[in-house]
Length: 288
Ligand code: ATR
Image (cartoon, rainbow, N blue to C red; front, side, top):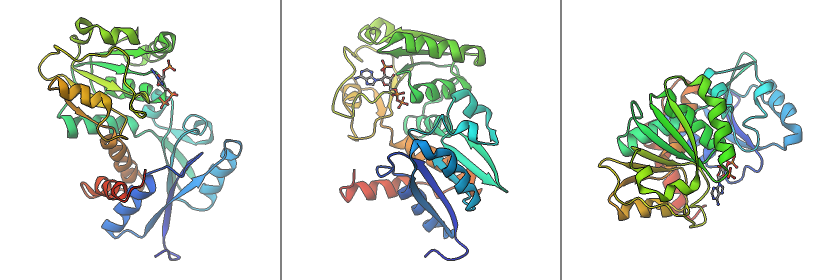
């Protein structure tokens, strides 16, 4: 029940109807008995500045930011964390005494999901990141910040991968960065040099596959993380299973970025498994 004492959090995006964040956050508020509520706000790009000022004026405690506002919101904030600045995008805003601070929990979410779902720690490892968009950038930055010593970016447009390397390399001195074209995925000798492959593209959402990719003959312990989570067993995960390679879908990252945002707003960790159970229950109702 919403009362005069209820604290509000929310999410801004356009469109927003597909967002699973209200399901996760409201489940965790309920399980913890916190008098909080999480609301989706469709915010047209032309009205972003008004919406952000309005949320602050209305006393919202914090909000998530999703497509297409993750970059555009940055100049509207009072402060941006170092990690969000490196990633170049904000997905979580904390509002305290009228001051807006931007964070990015996508990278923390990826590293947490790798640990929880694949028992994989990036420290000292070589990772191949497929895709050079916003999700690719946050993956590269967070893997390097977590100690990966080599990260290569494979992208359909290799120029975009090279631009990403040029922009991140000076700020990630402990990690060797490289850019290659997507065709290299068809070369088993090339893949054999890595410990982990992360797909950050949308390939797999329509039952499509990364062209030419073969996971045959890779080293023991090689793992695959696919940020796609619908379908739950993606074509990339099926290819991994054919070769006895451990893999996980993007649900773990979605949940972990939400758990990290929840903690930033409330100072309380959501109960373990609560957000994931809420999403699974929601999906089992036949929701997308
Ligand atoms: P996001 O912010 O989610 O990363 P994005 O910035 O639009 O989204 O980036 C999408 C990424 O998926 C890009 O790396 C894109 O490759 P290009 O830079 O060459 O466009 C990649 N991608 C999308 N569809 C693809 C496809 N069918 N095959 C290969 N790569 C694809």
